Length: 510
Image: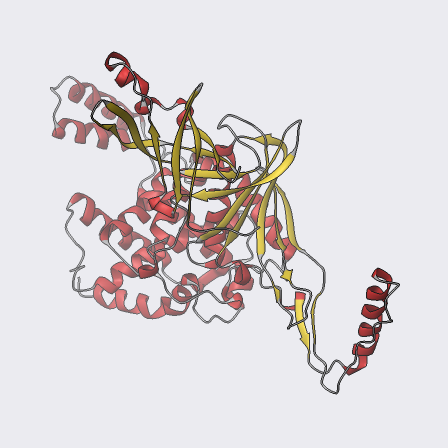
C-alpha cells in the first residue's frame, strides 16, 4: 500500500452534528492541519456558539475530499479560530491540528471497535528480519532458462490462442531473479493479538527490465475488533520491543489499519502527525543483522517465545519500559537527565520485579510510627515533607537494592562476565544522588564524564537485559557471539573491562 507523505486536498468536513463546512486538509507530519471556513453569516448573538472549536465532539472530524476519499481526523485541537469579512459579509474560520489522519474508503469513529489489524513498516525492518535466502539472483541461469521461457511462452499463448505462437529467445548469459514465495517470517500469539512479520514484495512484469523490491510489514491481528487508540497503544508496545532488539529507536515509515463491520472490510492509511521517529543527531552506527540481541529468522521459536513473554507482562512494566525507551533514545548523547531517568526507572518497577520490603525490628517500627506522628502535626513545609518521605521509605527496598536485584539476574546467568557489576551500579546511584539531591560527589563527575556515560549505559543494560532474561532471552548465546558493536549493548560488553578499570583507579584515590 503506497503512502503519500505530503499532500493537500480540499473537501467537505463535518465539524459538529449536522454542520458541514468547506476546508483544506494538509498532511505533512507535524505541519498537518485542517483549515475550514464557514461562509454563512450567523446572527451576532450566535456567532461564538457557531464554531465551538474548544469542544470538538470526541476530538474527531470526518470529511469527504473532492476525490471522494473519506477522512477521519482524530485528536483534533483548535490552533486558531476567528471571523473575518468584507463590508456586510462575514465568515468564520478555524485551523485545526489532528494527531492522526485516517483515509480511505470509509470513516472510522474513535469509539468504533472495528479495527481488526494494524500494520507497520519500520526503517530497520530489513535488519531486524534479515531473511537472506528469501530473495536471490542466479547469475549462471543457463540450466533453467529454457524451461522458464518455455513455460512463460505457453502461458502467453493460452491468453491469446488466435495469435501466432510466442517464441522467447534466450542468449548465452541469462540471469534469473527470484523470491522463494515464503512470505511469513514469524507469527506469535500474544496477549495483545497475533503479531507477525511478512515479506510484501512488489514487482513489474518486465519489458524494459525487471524490478523486485521487498517491504517487510509487521502486523497485529485481532480476533475481535478494537478501537483505534488501543491499536496505537499496542503499536507502541511492539516498537519498544523492536528497539531493544535492534539497539535504537525505530522510525515508523508507514502504517495502516484494516477495519471490518457488517458492510465491508477495507484497509485505511494512517498518517501520524508525530510518528515515532529517531533523532538523527543521536544516531550511532546502523544496526547490523549479526549484532541483534536475537535473530527472528534463524531463531524463530526463541524470538516468538521472547516476544510473547515480554508482552505478557507489559501492563505491569509499561511505565518503567517507557522511561527506558525515553532514556535509550538518546543513544550517543548523555545529558545528566538521562542518567537520572535511567536510575529512576528501577523505582517504578512492579513489586514482583524488585526485592520485598526489608524486615524491621519492633523497636524500629515503633520509632518510625512515632516520628511520623510527630512530623505530621507540624505545619506544611518542604523540610517536614522531606522527613516524612524519608520515614516512609524506612523498611522499603532502596534504589541500590532494587538495581542490585536486577543486576543479579545477569551475574547469575553469565557468572563473572561483568565483574564487580554491583560496584558499578552502586556508583551509578551515587552519581544520580549527586545530580538529584546535591549529595557529596564521590569524585569530580564533570572531569570524568566518560564514567557518567558508563553509569548510564550500565543502568540501561541492566534494565533491558534483566527484563529480556526473565522473558526467556538466551544471554549466553549473545555473550558468545562476536559483535561489530553496532548495537549499544555490544559496545557496552566490549568496553566494560576498560571502563571498570578506569572506575577502580579513581576509587583507589578516594
